Image (cartoon, rainbow, N blue to C red; front, side, top):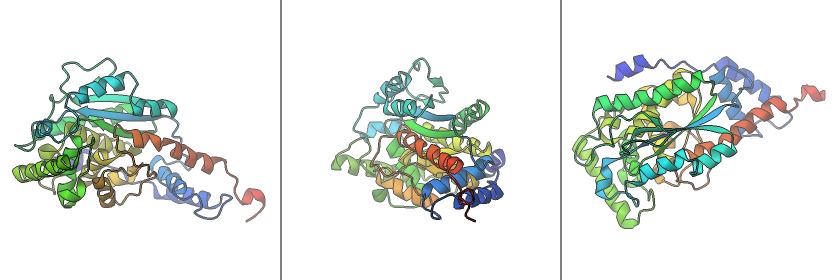
Length: 347
């Protein structure tokens, strides 16, 4: 099945010649070489993805994939499972943090229900429901492999639709009470790191809650024995519908040469799964910030990615990813508008 996934998503290599052109241009700007730091790297990497020295990234969007988790019955979250549905309504009304940031930075928002327990999602929410929440992964697989594939495809479909609509820079976010537990289980399996190093307070657990979450993750891994060589098996057994959908979004976006900005722990766990399916996906992903969740730093390390922002955030929703959008705009603007030394009469 892993071979099937590799065949399905043919990820093109980035344009290294265009990267070199962009780097030469950036090095000629009126500043010391490398003085703009990460902004310079953004220009170069975007050039390799888009095939343009000055990438047009004016049309942006953040996709929020939402689903419920059966593992919440184990008491792994400080909030009840019903909050997933309430927050979907909040997104649809434009009142969540990510909505505020997206409006401020002129970004589209798509809210996608891939697996909530809501009988009917609110108006404006894309209904792509595979099932009404996962099963309790502490007692067996979170979903079937076919359901994981359907969630993967739901994410891929949105990436394809956005590419067709002319979006040029995308971000992924999520909502699902219990999903830091699933994401940490996925991270533990794919990185081989001890569970205790990966888990944090999530939605605000106390010490006892963190200990209980660690035990639930450990039990889930023992019960299901997900195969780290098969990322789809990992997503099936201890993942979530929104994690699979985000992985599918990244796979299809990379196939279409569409850059994707990651958010925190959960989106980065999905990213590691996508990269393990297709290593070239890594070239199309950007790390926005480093979450306060301890597992996030280990996931970024596994992906060899350095975040643009460190703001102590752990909200999810795609909020950190959207917060990074102005840095992308700043990078492209400086490359396009700054003078070169040649223009000053210096060679």
